[in-house]
Amino acid sequence: MQKAYMNFIGKLLGAFISALGAFLAAIPHGAFLFCVKTLGFLMCLLDNKRRYNDAMSNLNFIYKDRLTPKQKKAIIKRCYKNFAFVILESIRIPKIPYYIHKQRFEVIDEHYLLDSLKKDSGAIIISGHFGYWEAMATFLPPRLRPYHMASLGRLTGIDSIDKLIISRRELQGVKFINKSGAFRELLRFYAGKNALAGILVDQSISSNEGVQVEFMGKKATYTPIASILSRRFNVAIVPTFIDFNKDYSKFSVRFYPPIYTPHTDDTAADIALATQAQADIQTLVINENPSSWFWFHRRWKDFYGEIYAAKK
Image (cartoon, rainbow, N blue to C red; front, side, top):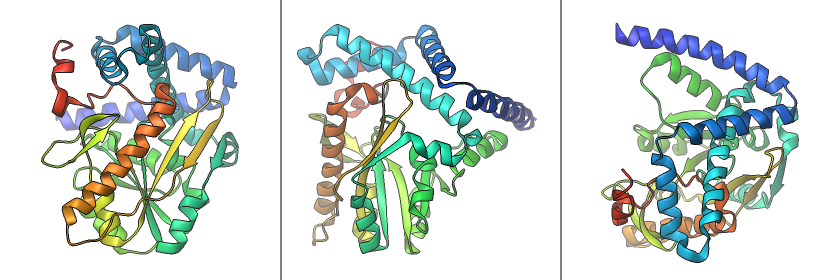
């Protein structure tokens, strides 16, 4: 009974989101930006301070006095606004024709990915919760055909809501892979030709599943999934980050040199080396523009849980 009720609510939510998306796609950019700022302000205002405190704990932990309190507060304020943009942009993107959508992007060093695809007949794109990360599934696929793109995500268990999530992720022909049981599905995916999966690798992962790395100068756990796939299928890991300008009207897609997992007799060392390389490039990207990263995650909780303890 409860599941049927939740599905009914999900259908209503889907209809509302569709109507809202059409509205947001039709209004001028200035009006859309006003909606982004308003939602960001409300999210900050209504937050129970968990996100704010976690973000400040992270910034204090990583940057200490290299950033002033004013600079840290500005970064957190921007984080709320960035989050609001990603939400509202995801709602309206099905209503924006691709030929208009693609005009907002500048592509930098795409040859790193194209050369890897040509050489290996597949690749792995890694990114993080940085900038407009959702555009990996909405902007890149039409540029990269005939390669088959897949994207990992979480489902809710509520059919109507899950259908909504999947429909938006698969808008440009991307194969949605549920994070629950994703590794087995990815093995099947890469067993075929022209496979290209996008994986966000910046969230904390349990120590029994992750690899210990140095991330932003601190110990952290990191998912080894891209490293394992690279080693098993001899394909490149291509770091890719999509940033936005101040008013979210233009986006830059930057590709970085490919990473290959070594293939020696020491499997664990091979995977650790490639995983650390991924953490290194992400550290570089975040340090170049800290305000574009999603600082709300409790990213260092496994090794430095005390930095969040007082902020429950």
